Amino acid sequence: IALDENGKIIHDFHVPNAFLYGTVSKYQDELIIIGTKYIQDENTSNKFIWAIDKKNGNKLFEVNLGVGSIISTDISGFWFQKGYIYASNNDKIFKISAQNGKIVWQRKVNGNVHRHTVIADSQAVYYTTLKGEFGSLKLKNGTVNWKVNIEEGIITPPTVINGSLLIIGDSSIYVVDKKEGLIYQKIPTGHSPYSAATIFRNRVFLGAGEPPINGLLFCFEFNQGVNNNLEISQDFYVGNTLNSKKLQLTIETKNNWDEAIIDPSVLSDAAEIKGQKIGNNIFVFQIPLKNTNINSWYTLSIKLKEKRQIKIVTTAIKIRRTDQLPRKVTLSNFNKIANESTPFNSGSALTQMIEEEYGKKISQEDFRDIIDYLKKTSKWKDADFQTWRLLLKRALSSPAKDLNEFIKLEDENDGHPE
Image (cartoon, rainbow, N blue to C red):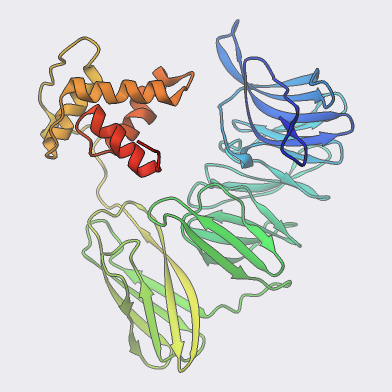
């Protein structure tokens, strides 16, 4: 959909049977878009690149990249540069001519690479995968310049900054020489959702959104040259298991600080803990751990104080599992029979059983009324498919015990008139 400066619709183009996502790029007289389309003869959903006439929406060409998944974020699209489209699907990266849709080359990499787009500059194509690999490919033929694997999977695209790449993984920013793939800095950040790092002047912004961070925004200053002059010169920890009640973290700082106060709230019930100072530059923190932590990386911020000077630094901690999870487990609380009142109330019967376990009594009929109301008001074409996914989540988030109470609470919360 194209709008003018007053918000009036100029064009409204459609690609039949397709789900479009990502960005839209303009090249000469065409618009380049990406999405998936159902192939009836093969009973598959395939990923496509389309070029359409920007004046009338007529299809100029389409490129079938094979069976693919719907990924509805802006960073899951493609990269357009100097007449070429760089796109990915599953574990393959493609270079495509925007002139005629011809695939110039394709390259297989280690891991799913289509969760987030590849990027390019005048020297190479850079990618990251869900298996934790990042690398560089030659623009001309897609051969590998270098590739590196880190511990955790990567869910954000790389960011180019001068002669370096910023790679978000292991709850940290890796600063990597983009020519050789050499990692020369690792800065703890916490979990990032899907976005790339954003550069503005001499600062790097990174939004974190997944638990346990939940919406934290990081801002880092950077220097144009290589700089490893970090304030924390050494850190180590013990007691970092899911079975442990307390974690001990030790940091050594470059400069002499009067106080060091840590915010451990992502993995502890404590809001802040003051470190015990040992000598001039060493602080030790005793951190009680929650019993709800998971096997993951956690980033903690530390406030260093010296008279009126304050500096914020971060450190990353891996909480690990020592006992393997069983292949099969029975939830004893719900090892019982749930009877449905009608053949259409199976989901409501299960919901009723679980709600009653936690002290909320609601009839199957009342819960089903709420679900049907949400299906109707959502106006989703796939509301039936979403019934026990998205609609169930919305219904369960309300304390209402019948439809009238549900509607009243919805109106109050959304500011709607009675």
